[in-house]
Structures are given as C-alpha cells and as structure tokens.
Length: 274
Image (cartoon, rainbow, N blue to C red; front, side):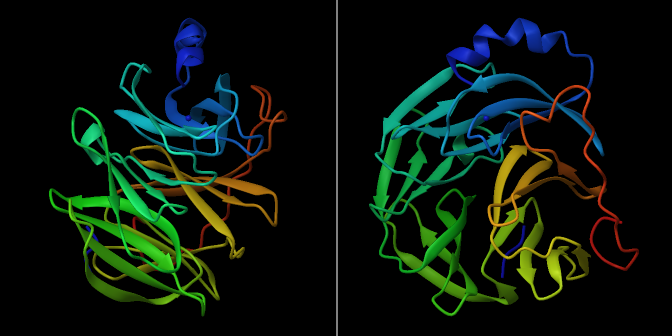
C-alpha cells in the first residue's frame, strides 16, 4: 500500500488578520460551520476573524484551499481570491488540497463523481464505487486514492485512474475501523486503542482520541483539524516528518484570544515523529 477555511470575506478582513503577530497555522472550519483563520503554537491557539460564515466542508494547504458552501465548490488561491466556482449541489462533499491547485480534488457522493482541477476548470469524473468515502487525494498525475469504509466498518484504500475513473486497485487497511486519512506520508486511522499514526516505516504511535466518528479536514500543509460530532470535541494535529503534536481546540465562541486549548498527553512509545 502506498503511503507516500475565505473568499470575499477573507479579503475584507485581510488587514485585520495581518495585525495578528502570532504565527498563522491556516484556516479551520469550526463546529459552528464558519471558517476562521487559526494562529498560534501547540496548546496555544487563537482564531482570527471569521472568513467564511457557513461551509459544509473545507480543506486548505499553505498554497490555497477548497471550500464547499450552499451547493458551490470554490477553489481558493494563495491570496485568498476565488479562482473558480463549481455548482455541485452536494450537502457533504469530501475535499482535499494538500499542495498547489493541481492537488485539489473532491468526492461528490450523490453523483458518485470525483472532481479534479485541470488548471483551467473543474472536471467531473464518474466512478463506480460503493461504501462511504472518508478521504480522497491526488496520488499522482494519473491517479487518485480514496479511503472507503465498508458495510462491516473495515476500511479499504481504493486507487482510481484519472481521467477515466476506473478502479485499478482495492486493498485493505489492516486494523482500521470506520475512518482513515493520509497526512503527508503518515497514515491516520482509528482502532480499538484510539487514533493511530503510522509512519512510512510502519512504526506506530497511538493518540488518546478514542471516538470512532472522527472527521479530518486540512488546516494547512502540516496541520489537520480532527472533530467528533458525538463527543462535540475538536483537536488540532501538527504532523510532519519531525513533529507530532495534538491539542484540543475549544468550541466557538469560547475560542477567543483569551482561551487556550489544553494539550493532550502523549504516550512515550516508539512510533511516528517522536
């Protein structure tokens, strides 16, 4: 198996955001459905001005993002401008953007289609696929990878060729139950012990997040927002080749410049990104 939030409102508040001196993490879609700029460091985050009032899904890298709102999918450029809009009519698309615009991809469950960006416009690609898609990403110039939860709650990784939409490979994710997500070259998945982080070399680290209904959305290139609807809790995960840190994010409107999320205690066991 291969392992390898902001629109016109964002432009209006850019002057305010620039006045914030703490480091910018990225853009986060909070539990109230709004998208905010997120600033700070581990266990010390604050939200900036609200950039988008209502979004059903969002994904951001350091080079731009995707926002789904009221049946529209918008590609956001590095300067916060809307580069393109696609009217997809979906209530809950699955989005991913982990690099430049060429990495933008969406799964539209109602239509059973992948939506990719060809440099000038979005292209819809029908895919015959059963199961619940948890995550999607561009895996190369001619393929996409999706994590799919099966009826028995097991997770499989599905490779789809682009642009024809043909499923070329299906492989199980050992031990995963109900959800999986890839962050850079790390695999995140839930099992009986909690949230597992599997490094490229196979080593594992268990995070004390036991909820099984996890949702993952990118905040920035190295940052992931993890949420649980059943527990009404949110976390910020900082993960790359050298860093693994997770903090709990307070719910809005308590997430003010005076609030500080509490850090999650980390087990000192061999695994990813010590």
